[in-house]
Every structure is written in C-alpha cells, then in structure tokens.
Length: 385
Image (cartoon, rainbow, N blue to C red; front, top):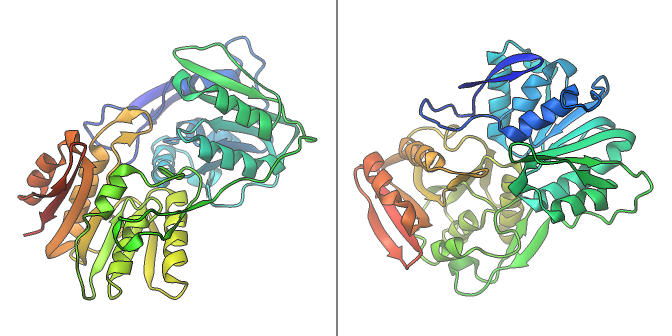
C-alpha cells in the first residue's frame, strides 16, 4: 500500500488483489497530473465538479477514491479495478454508495458534465468507449483524458477528435500528458465498428474454420494470435463429462474448442474483463448454439470456483499489468487452478518459452511436463496429485 498526497489530503491506495511484495503503486504520474488539473494547481482554472462526473478506465480506483466526494460514476472493463476501487474507498473511510460502478458493457449515464478518461492500452477499447459516451456529452461538458506519454499517440487524439470534437494535448510532465477535448454536438459520427467477427484458419483443431466474436479491447481482436494458435493445435484429447475451465478466456476460442471436441464436457469461461466474457459467450453461442450448456464468469481468477470441482483448466496467462511486466497474475492463476482441481485434475498452460512457467508450476503442483514446444512457445501440463 502507498499514500497519494493531493491538495485534498492523503489517500492510502493499493491494487487488487493486494500483494505484500507488489512493487507497483495504484496510481501513476498521469493520475496525479489529472488531479492537479482538476484542482487548478498548475495555473489552470479549477474544474467545476458539481455536475455529473464520469471517470472512465480508472485502473485501480485512485481517481475515483480521490473524487468520491463528488459522487462520480466509474466505468471500467476490469473487475479487478472495481474491487480495487471498493477496497480503496473503504480504507479511506468513504461510503461505497457514494460511487456508482459500471462495467464497459453497462449503459452509461444519460448526461455527463465532466468526462475524465484514463487512456487505455487498447485503442479499440477507447474507440468503443467514446462511441458509447458521446450521446451523453453536451457542448458544456469538460472532457479531459490522461495517460503516460508512451500511451498517447496521434491515433489516440484522432479518436477523440473524430468522436467527441476538437482535441489538443498538454505539455508533458513527469512523462505524463493530458488531452483536452471540446465537444461538438453537431459532429457527424459513424457507428462503432465493434464487435468484430472473423473466421479461424484451418489447422487449429476442432475450431478450424469457425467464427470468433471479439468485443473491443480483446487481445488480438483482428486475428488469431500465434500463441493461441499453437495452444489450439496441442489441446488435450478427452471425452466424458469433464468440467473444464477456460481461465483468462479472452474471446473464448480455447474453451469453445474444448467444448466442440468433447460434447459431454461442461465449460466455464472466466476473465476479469467484462468485454472478454461477453466475447467468449458470443463465440461459444455462435458455434454451439443458444441451448448448449456453459458458464460465463467475470471475476478474480478461480476465486468463485468451488475447490476440487474441476477436471481440466486451460490457461494462457497474461504477463502484463497495463505497462508493467509481471508474473503475479500467472502465479495467482496457477494457485487458484490447483485449489479448484480435483485430485488427478490437470492444468494446461501455454506461454512464451522465456517466461519460465515450468519453474512456478513445479513449485505449485510438484510436477510439470512439456507437452509441446517450438522456439517461441511451450505447452505445459501439471497434475494435482
């Protein structure tokens, strides 16, 4: 936990889930720059926050917590960001009911007077969010984006300009930058291009030639990434009434492949991204129909799966948390999978060879075997003894 100091006081903040050895803070210079702008500290006029305030993409709830007195609406695609926000509000003595938490899939407020956007890593997610929010923005809405310099590109500014109105940027401060956008109610907008659909290539097992549905912000939404392609070509061949989890499901192509290969199996799709779980459900339904049995969970890994209830976990763990490279998510997923698996149950993992997941799997499970590998990727199998 770290303490963010602002003109409004100090705030104790942490990411979620909170790890004692986590070296990363729950905010960065971009959040601080935006807060100073709102307060009018750096020579700017203070922003009137008495109207409807919407905070989009607040990564760990720092902005929402500091602004809790203004009763903001937070919109995020991240379940973990929502949990972090609630935890940070509680540790700073704020009533969670002062903040309205919405997911990227929820209908946004009908009117927005102040729109604060933490620029996401995914340009597609930003595009979809701006399209959803634009109808609620009026000529008097204050629109400010924030991000680190390496997160804000010409394409970022063009999106604001095309969907909201004229846009300019600030000078860089501590490698962070602000985006100022003036809403143009007369702006003609094209509809959002999301979701995207594409057909899978041949040679990827049971999903060869099948349709994938991708909502905005999903990894490799335009095409099948090479790691998942490799995994699909080496999935276990099983039969019978297995309980399978596609952990960190993304667009659900791995779990859908398992369901097609074994019609007796029941698959649970889990991701912390609301957009990902919506994509997984759309992909599954497009290929197995509306009556096929499956479960779709937005959550913190395997936290909501009963212990000892799963036969097989399929996992392509992320190794980035926003701009930071970390194995914390993979470690959490591996431990959660071990708890959820029955005795004899298996975890299958694909990852870049250099990440060394075999070491962590041996620590967690006491065993790990290599199923397949090439110069870049490896598929690993661990069994709960």
